[in-house]
Length: 317
Image (cartoon, rainbow, N blue to C red):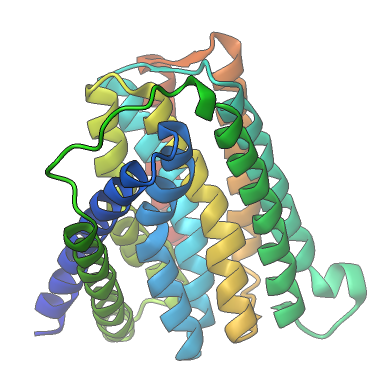
C-alpha cells in the first residue's frame, strides 16, 4: 500500500504541476505579460512547485535530509539527465542573453549555499546548519533575481503586438485550474514525503539517499516533460530556460522558504553533492558558450554523468 500511495503522490505532483503551469500561463496571457517573462517565472516556478511542496513539508516534519537532498538531487538531475535527454532529442540553441546570465546566477546561488552551510569550517561551530537567517538571505537573493527578470520582461513588452484575448480564455476557468493544480501538488507532496521516508526506513536507506534519488527524480519529472516537449516544438530557449530557472528557484525559494520555516541540519555527505552541482553548472555554462548550443554529444556526456552520480550515491549509502 505504501508503494501505491507513493506512485499516487508522484502522479498528483506531475498532474498538479501540469494544471498549475497551464492555468498560470493562461492567466499571464490574459494579463498580456511577455512570453519570455512567463517562461522565466511562471513555467520555472510551476515546474519547481513539487520540489517546493515536498521540501517545505519535509522541513515542517523535521526531515531535513529529505528537504535538502530533494533540492540538490533535483538540480543535479535537471543539469544532467533533463538537459542531456532534451539535447539528445533536439539540440538546444543558446541565443538569449538572459539565459547566458541566468547560468552564472545559478552558479552564484550554488556557491552561496555552500558558504552558508559551511558553519564548522568557516565559523568553528559544532554543526552545520541552514538557519532562518540563511533562509532569509536566499529569499532576498530571489527578490533580486525576480526584479531583474521582471525588468527585462517589461523592457521587451513594447515588442509584443496588442492582440485580442482568445475567447476560450476566461479568468474563472484558469483560476480554478491553477487552484486545483496547487491542491494536487500539496496533497501529492504529502504522500511522497510520508511514504518515501517510510520505504527508505524499510529498505535500510538513509533519508539523504531517498531525497537525492526517489524524491528528487519524482519531483523533477515536470521539468523533464516540459523541457522535452518544448525542445520537440523547437522552443530551445523555453526548454533550457525552464531548467536553469527551476534550479534557481529550487535553491533560492525552496531552500529559502524551508530554512525560514524550520532550520535545516546539514548532513556532512551532501557537501560532495553541492560541489558536484557547482561543477556541473560550470560545465553547462561552458557547453552553452562554446558553440552556443548543447548538441547530442554534450547531451550524452551529461546523461552519462548522471548515471555515474547515481551509482556513486547508491554505493555511498
